[in-house]
Image (cartoon, rainbow, N blue to C red; front, top):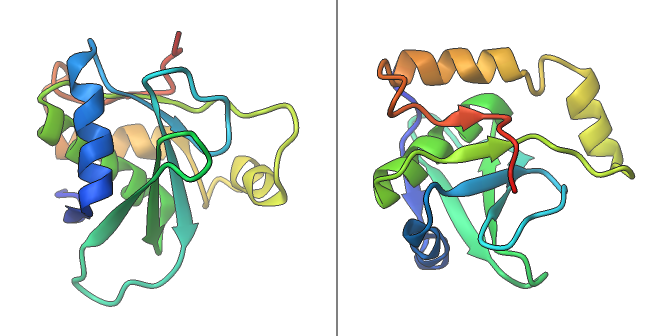
Amino acid sequence: MPTQTVTLDPAAAWLIDRTAGGPAPAVVLGAGTVPPGALRLLVTPGSLGAGRPLVVHGDTATGTPTLRVLAPDLVPAVAAVLLAVRDRTGRVPRLSCTWPARRALSEVVSLIDPAVFSVPRLRNLLRRAEPSPARRPLVCADLP
């Protein structure tokens, strides 16, 4: 199953390019602590319209390099962004699903409701999109 098409705005492309020098791009999903050199990924629920690509916006306003995406479904959006990071950098990204001790209500809902975010579903989507384990993004990997 192919993932959704992703378009990077110039700021997102620049942020992703900055991670290309390390061993593997690190991405933190949600509002967890972001280690130096890693990117935060925030996906906001919303409608795109049929056939429209996901647009990834780069943001450094909080001091943390952040990729922001509006998407109707969290899991396919995360898979598509991880594959886009891999394709742009040439390195397999690692996704951390570590959550902060104090969670925003939306993050608590996403942890409780498997229809919103499911690690097995994400891994399955990535497995179907990328058959080679060596090229498949790592999900919920520990970050330094």
